[in-house]
Structure formats: C-alpha cells, structure tokens
Length: 199
Image 1: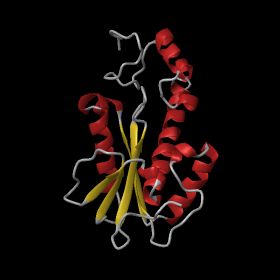
Image 2: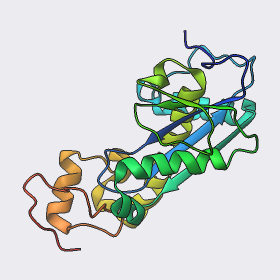
Image 3: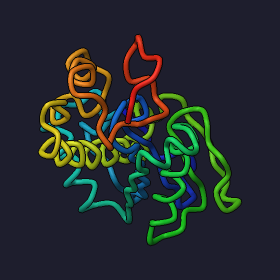
Image 4: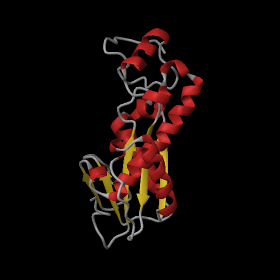
C-alpha cells in the first residue's frame, strides 16, 4: 500500500515526468497535491498499469486532487538544455502552475534543482511508494500519450500512437526510411549506427 505523502503535516506536492527516453515529442511533467483523506487501491506507478486503468485514474485524480498541473517541454528546449534539465524544468513549471503553493516537494527519481527555496526530497521509484508521486506519474503519462496520438495523425508512418516516440525497432525503421521529423530530438542518437542525420 502506497503512503499518501512524506510529511503528513505539510501541504506537499508530488511530481514526476514522462518521456525522458523518447526520441520524439516533448518530455511531460506533472505536479499534484492530494487531499489528506485521499486513498485509492489501484493507484501506483503508471508503468504498472494498463492504458485503460491509467485513464480511469486520471479522471479520479483530476476530480479529487486539491490541485494539479501538467506541462510539456518541447524538443527545441530539450535540445538546448539537455533532457535532464528539461525534465526538471518541466517539474518546476508544473509546480508553478499549482493553484496552492506547496510547503514541500516530493520528486520521483534522484535529481532535482531547488525551486523557490521550498524544501524537497528525491525518492527513487517514488511513483511506487507515494500516492501523490504516482498521481503525477499518471497525469504526465496520459497527457503525453494524448499529445503523441495527436502528432501520430501528422506523421502516421512512425506509429507514435503505439510507441509514443520511444526507440522501438519499428520507430527506428521509420527514421531510416523517412528520416527525422520536426518532432524528433536533434540532440538524441536516433539510430544506433548514427553518425549524422540531416534535419
């Protein structure tokens, strides 16, 4: 059973991102503050859940959270500042978008940069330990998946509706055949044998 949050006496947000390892599309971050009486038996790390279950939980989180926010950091920013900094920037922006200012920030993973002098803690595999981080992971994942499904309509050959921009064999075969799109991350090694790809 996941714990609600790290500090029971503080207004605490959980934050997480989705899409760090993708070759195309944004990295998406979410921040969530849950009420102190929140619980849900199925809420856990988004990677452990089916798409159907994630979408069901998304509705519950959006209805019951005190507040939440989701932000995309696009490919050009990822290429300028690198994926780690872009992930942290997305988390900062999603925290900034909360209508209630948290007193403490719980982050999934092991890297973060201070945000407005608010105390924080990084929790490795936090989306499997704390409900507010798990809720953030579900919002980040579902919002990013919906964005990639939209991009799929523009570039169906890459099948982003299914692979979401991750480096699957099918996705890489499409890059070999058709080249990169404006949604591919230029700073990433798009093909294992890549020396230089023309954009």
